[in-house]
Image (cartoon, rainbow, N blue to C red; front, side):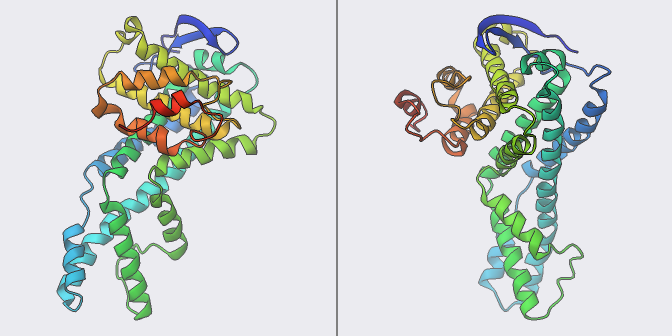
Length: 326
């Protein structure tokens, strides 16, 4: 089950305890194993996806040469040969987002079920909570890398323009892996978002709530707010932060905290920033701002630009000021 320790008693889940979740070592119990193994396959692939994205260089030079030399067939062929395998990677990234959505639904099915409270689920099913956290960590990391790599959209735009021109001229692409119009349109929408994986998960969480009317929405929002509060407590309490075996776990917790806040903000009708929210937004923002700026600027931007309710009139000026870019 993993090592779960009640660390503080605060105003969460009707005065239930805050927890130390063992994000580093929690292992599945027998009852968790089936779902854990299914999700673990996706998380294993997630590592490969991140490695591929980190090494994604783009075909910027080849595309520039092709645009500058439109009538030189060899230059056009070189650009096309460079872009086709890159678009195959982009297709893999997009298709992986669908697998991630499916895994999220599997975990939410269990962590929000009516047989226990959301806090009890997190306490008793730590390995699945850890997987949920890993999905969020991957999502924030993917989007951070995507936002700093304009080559992704440039490559795909060039690919679509070239394919369109080939079709008009009745030319074969000879790529063997041409992305059809319907898929290309979906991929364009996906990559047009500043944070495509986070948008996928936000939409997936909203869809989970709407597709499961028998599950009270509070089951989902309290699950999310509990995890946000757990991360905040672990980060702001030196005694518990010292339990982390790796300093990387600090950034892991920060990404998970921001991820669940954004999901909560999209699912909860009033959002995460109102006084009645189960999330201590001021405390969470303070924890972020207590970290080295270079490591959290992307996470602060995620709260600024991908939340749904930050600019609502019900959001306090103090929170808005705390999130203002310097």
